[in-house]
Length: 283
Ligand code: URA
Image 1 (cartoon, protein in one colour):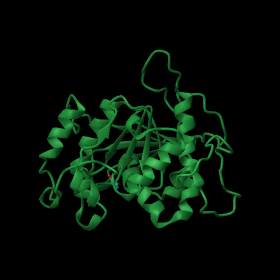
Image 2: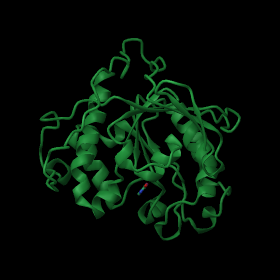
Image 3: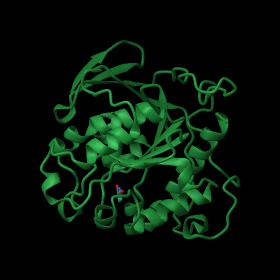
Image 4: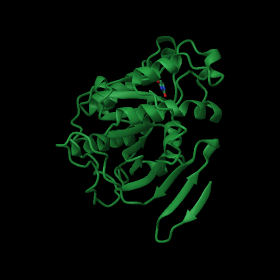
């Protein structure tokens, strides 16, 4: 990774992570205005002036997050404030992303894709699904067993939890678009290899470009690294509003990680309430 210092507190990284097409990442840059959407909508984060908070910093660790366990809870109560800006990523390589014109076209290409060895072990590819005009787009890592059998994202246990997370902030899954970094299941649910990820990323990039969500949520480390182009812990990247090609992006724990480690449900609850507030700002 090359690092160029532009003076002040701005640092640009030219990310050549895993040989992926060059991506520029700027730290601590003010957020650019959102690309135009419906004329009545206000910019989502342009007026963010709240100093970086540390929601939950003084809170005793607790696994009890009723809202994520299917119990009624008002997400507005003690919701953390919207955090300040983080990294800003802009893809500088336009030729790397083929110009598929529709999400259906991408799905058709994905279903017969043979660009990486995962095609040999998959049952069904999982292109992603949801509202093509979704305001919220969620990005996971890759299909698991249930997804591989059904061809649909997040339909197993992690998917159940994701549905509950969405319900807790009064959002229905059908109002979102859900996609993964890799579209085919890695054997034994291992983390996708860099070559597999890089072969698949043009699909995700084009899906985001076509949906043009108002907010991206990266679920877990693989999605975060693939989109932000940096290898940092989620702890370092949470609680900031990053930007991916002009689209605000926040990161949180993967639902499967929350199932393994319920102590992360509390910070994830803060993250999704931040997401909900960001969406409300643009509503
Ligand atoms: N985990 C993911 O990252 N994606 C899915 O679709 C299912 C589980």
